[in-house]
Image 1 (tube, rainbow, N blue to C red):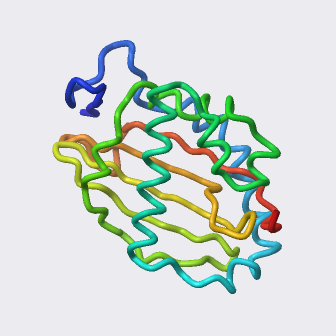
Image 2: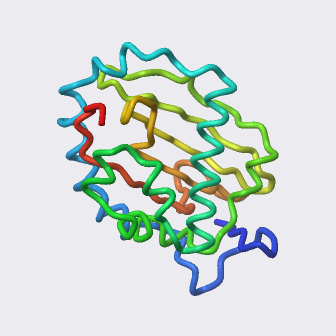
Image 3: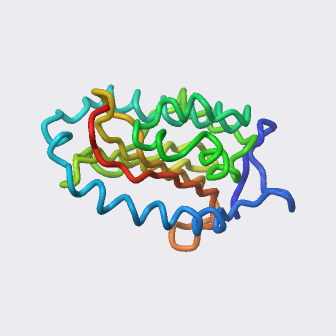
Length: 192
């Protein structure tokens, strides 16, 4: 069973809390499909960048997820939008992010600030030039899983894709209907 942390503790979702995210997944499929072609064309920029150290990786992950947390709690996605890669900002506004993360609205993920991250794969730069960070926070009784993709924009690694899932104690990866949100952009990898 999926559980929700609404600031009053982790508990099963109420009838009014949509935890499937399935509707947004369909909306975002078209955006996701456009990413591959655009990114594949220009991976050389990021290939010359070094991988972040484990400390920098942790800072990147926690900063991203805490920014998402603040946006979800306030309903204001302007700061998160401003921290995204330039091509994302040009194509999508803060309202796109708000819509993508509707299932997380009002929910807390800030417990990760004091929790060590557990990487499930070594940080790597794909052939398309995207830095991929994968892992989770063991936020008992639930687990917050993340897949974060960054690309070089304005001279630094900036977020282009975020996939966050909260897995409750009685769900499994294969059948998890956990909280899911995914936002990505048609990213040409040009330094802005």
